[in-house]
Length: 260
Ligand SMILES: Nc1ncnc2c1ncn2[C@@H]1O[C@H](COP(=O)(O)OP(=O)(O)OP(=O)(O)O)[C@@H](O)[C@H]1O
Image (spheres, rainbow, N blue to C red):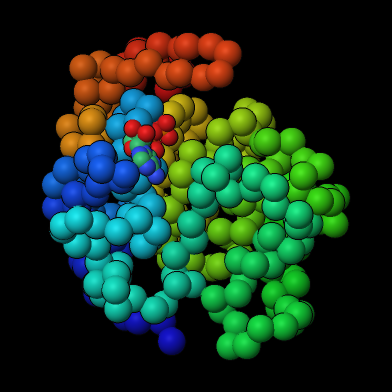
């Protein structure tokens, strides 16, 4: 059963979250709310704690102190997992996974099913529709290992979509995805957002998603440095250098042309 959510209650409320990993303080006293139907983006330099925060929000990383509530229920008591669609960072999720596109996306239906077993017709149809929606209809039976990084990323998005979730938590869902598919993903997220789905998006480059965003939260060294409209993110707040294996790109402020 879906729990009722009063219209003003946040779908996600993180309060005073402090996290230490391997003896290193990664988040300090972080507050983050996502309202019903809101589209929030989490920005910040490499290593500022974005992934750790979203992983803590979905219960994958324990807090030293502070709290997480999902749909008004403390995380420890939250059982309605299908209300959350989580897209992990691809590198964390797909390394060495010997599964087909169909299997991975079908696993997104598991929280909806009362017992394990082969998916029913509704499950199969939902899987096929989601895989079509991310442009991989012809790769349903392909092994994940045979897909490009951008295609694997789209499989993870399809997996989150089939949950029919009310809150999508996406950790860099467009990393490695080409511009055309980023645009179609933005269109899809726009449709879901208009239907009332809430989104928490970790991003480096907003690209076509930018127009969808209601609010930006900027992390810096594990602390919230800014929380407000994207247009208010200044160079100082968002100044960061991205380190990639083969290149280093300086991202300047939004409003200033370019990657944003
Ligand atoms: N399991 C872990 N053990 C120890 N330190 C960790 C662990 N996971 C992350 N960290 C450290 O915590 C800090 C924050 O990492 P996190 O992945 O949350 O940052 P991020 O903002 O998502 O970075 P990126 O943009 O590179 O994905 C980094 O310094 C990272 O090295």
